[in-house]
Structures are given as C-alpha cells and as structure tokens.
Image (cartoon, rainbow, N blue to C red):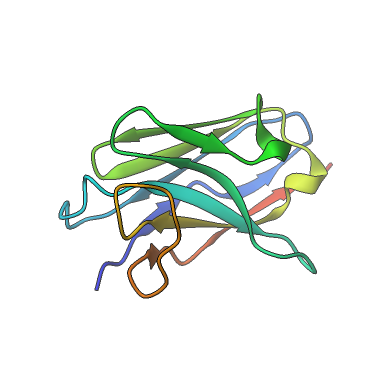
Amino acid sequence: QVQLVESGGGLVQPGGSLRLSCADPTTHHILNAMGWYRRAPGKERELVAAITSGINTKYGDSVKGRFTISRDKNTVYLQMNSLKPEDTAVYYCIEYGSSWYELSPGYDYWGQGTQVTVSS
C-alpha cells in the first residue's frame, strides 16, 4: 500500500499563488502517471492536472494558463498562480495505476487531501 505524502495547501488571497507537492516515498512507481484532482463543497471531483513520467501533461479547462504541473521522478508539483475563490477545494494527489493518466479503480493511489482556500 502506497501512502502519498502531500503538502503545501493553505489560505491565500485572490490573485495569489500556492505550490502543492506530493511524493511517493517508495519510488516503486516512477513510471506511473501522477496528478491532482480537487473537490469543492457541493461539487463533483474534477481533474486539475496530470503528468506522465515523460513530458505529457493534461489540464482541466478551468485552470489552463494559471496552473502548472511538473514532476521530479516520484514527486509531483502543482504551481497555482492567479488563484480565484472558485479554486477553493480539497486537492487530492493521485498516482495512477499505469503510465497514462487514466483512472484505474483499485490500482490508483490517492493522497489524503490538502485544503486550498482562496479568500480575502
């Protein structure tokens, strides 16, 4: 069982920035895709961004141009700029069960979630 370690959430004013990080301590899945989802109160979970072990990335439409996902082997980062109140959510790291960013229930690993609150 992999326990992903997330950090970097918090409270930020609109227009501000935050950086999230998520690490797989085992280093056994460095070829697997990784990414971030979020769930806001009363809303469904949505993809924020995902990245393969190479250079392929995917972003949710609402964050394109503002968020950047990057990776260093077993650690994935999410740089969030120009934050808006609607970005407020619990952000969950995912290590996909394969090398591509497709959900595979039972094979994916999830972080515990980190709260991001954008408010003045």
